[in-house]
Length: 236
Ligand SMILES: NC(=O)c1ccc[n+]([C@@H]2O[C@H](COP(=O)([O-])OP(=O)(O)OC[C@H]3O[C@@H](n4cnc5c(N)ncnc54)[C@H](OP(=O)(O)O)[C@@H]3O)[C@@H](O)[C@H]2O)c1
Image 1 (cartoon, rainbow, N blue to C red):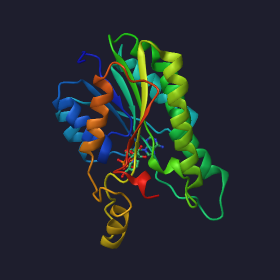
Image 2: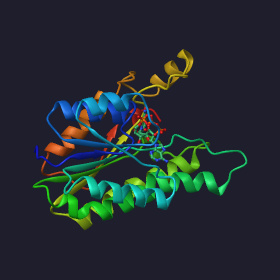
Image 3: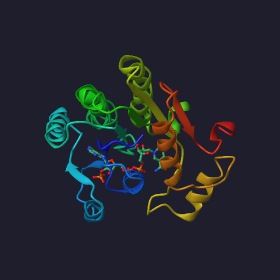
């Protein structure tokens, strides 16, 4: 349902978050994004009428500063899309600070933002929280232990918040496998990555938007995590 209350998308100034922000705006939603780096797309977002707020979730102070700023800019929220993420391999040798950053971005930020924004979400006639996780949590990863563990915790928060915030706020997750390549990925990597799914495609960010719209529009789904993986679980 469209309301005048905005959808918040964290990390919305590039790639999947940017695509969802612009497409939801086109569909008539008010949208707020958070950004860490000042990407050129911010001009495009602002021109589309999207409010762009700075945020660095790598510390509790940064998360709380963002929450205060958000509360000053809106009196309600239609939905929150927790998209901000750090695709970080474990450093060698491993260290606590790298893990701590992923803990803050993938776990503490969604946790504190959800709790602080519950009253804002309750202003909207229908309200949603969507956690963007990662298909890697099915199997773990030998070189991204911290990334995978922190995303798995985000999946688990979907269950807890869905029960805590029902019936007014639905809480769901989306668990994508490869959606889009990085600029530096070479063709061999792309081919190998594509062949890991049975659908053998790299779909691009529109499939995430489709999953988001499904969750926003369906009144009978909460506490679920939607696999968006091209059938990758059938091969590995
Ligand atoms: N792309 C894929 O194929 C794929 C596959 C599986 C899952 N996913 C999930 O889908 C979501 C979007 O993916 P993506 O590839 O579009 O991600 P991305 O390009 O890595 O963008 C993530 C966003 O998060 C922001 N961010 C990173 N660290 C932050 C921090 N400390 N504080 C605040 N914001 C921070 C980034 O800001 P900066 O621009 O400043 O770095 C960026 O805007 C992520 O949750 C990702 O885990 C994506």
